[in-house]
Length: 436
Image 1 (cartoon, rainbow, N blue to C red):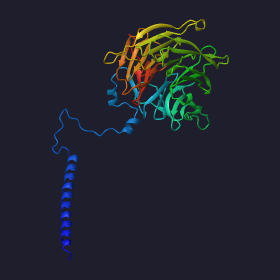
Image 2 (cartoon, one colour):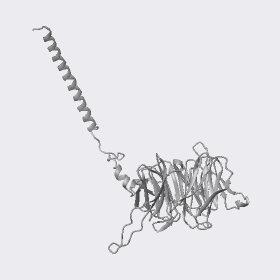
Image 3 (tube, rainbow, N blue to C red):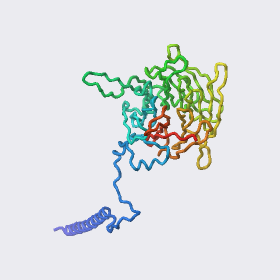
Image 4 (cartoon, one colour):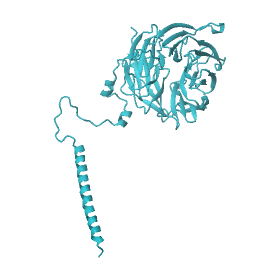
């Protein structure tokens, strides 16, 4: 017998014994750790008055689909003007718009869904809403109502560029057997693709053209992140005008409530204003540059028209707001006039004046709502005085704000309501502050 074989056998046996001892020790240690994890407090003490029992976290799925206020929601409503929160959005809310009667609020969400909320009572614990899914791949950027509360225009962006869709409801056909036919979901009435040379649409404003010979049709102004602004006939989708700001980059553009003027806030301190000229048949004939608002020392971040279309309110990075009278005889070379100049009453912790990101004026023309980041302020348009401030109106930056064009029911009262949307996936409704 080979003398080496006993040595090899002995080595194998010793190795097996060592391995057994090692793994046995390892597994005992792991079992001890597992018991420690499963019972971290082997000698539990009774709960004291300061201790809180543990509860499993609420289901995210249930939370996202709930539109009722829990006790936790009530605690979050830390501001007295905070009326309600519209939840259920799956991503940042990029745009919102009220219908002309104030009874419907359309929201554009980055989850690819347009939601139309029925606002029968602003203080309701839950809201009914209609859901419209955009074509696959599209991300809603903005929304505006067309001729009635069942017709909306949506700006969507995808890799191939920007698109516009107009959704409208078909009127149900009454039948002898079914006199209460359920309204069908809105369907696409017209669409345009790769508009604005494929650049993203950043704002979308609509107005019923009532000035001059206009026939009352809704005109939609879409503003790109470039320098162009396009005008659309709300009902037919016909392109009725195009202007170029020639200012490197647009911040936003708005159309006056009577459909007469377009004004754009862009890269420079000047604001350009165009007039839409209507033909005798009510159609838009041409768009011409008629005036410029000169006075700010830095870029204008946002602007809005007064309800009577005679004034424009601007906010600038120079730390000021201006109210302009544009009801002038520009054809006689009469320039628009600055009526008032107010310092922006918002500062950071170091005392530096901040600029406003967005503005919206109440339907009575008396209160201006303004935002910076997640901060919301209400100002008296007559004096520039701050009426109220919500420092953390949302859990993230506010993306858009809009006043309801008419008062909304809140219990037995009628109140002016402001809506704000944010990247925090929520839309909030706010009551109007008192002017006194």
